[in-house]
Length: 158
Ligand SMILES: [Zn+2]
Ligand SMILES: [Zn+2]
Image (cartoon, rainbow, N blue to C red; front, side):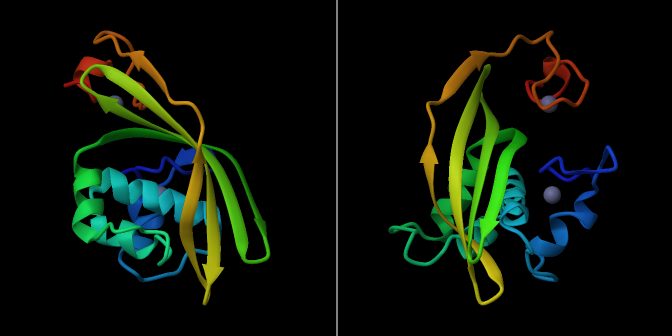
């Protein structure tokens, strides 16, 4: 299975087992803020509420519990991640990204500049600044926005 975060090495899509899975299983730690961001996106994509909860820095979760993260992940059809910019200064990281999700026949683009903190050799998400959200209609015969190469009706709109 291709990793949902659509990371590439040498132009080839990385396999989930070589990308976010070892992070989700707790076998390795994230080395960069971008890696953590990608693994959180993949966790949202796959509905791994516990991982999303664990990687949200304590003190920034509000009243949300694991079930809330799980429900949020399961209720959203994520389809594509674009990393626009990422940088790290000491224990702080910033990642700007666009994450796309589908609701009925509409493609929503979540554009966020997220903040991350490195604590005890582990990266965590803290909070983010949302940019204006964009919504566009998906036509069933158009290429699927996830860039699978399939028509939308054979892919995420199936
Ligand atoms: Zn990945
Ligand atoms: Zn698709």
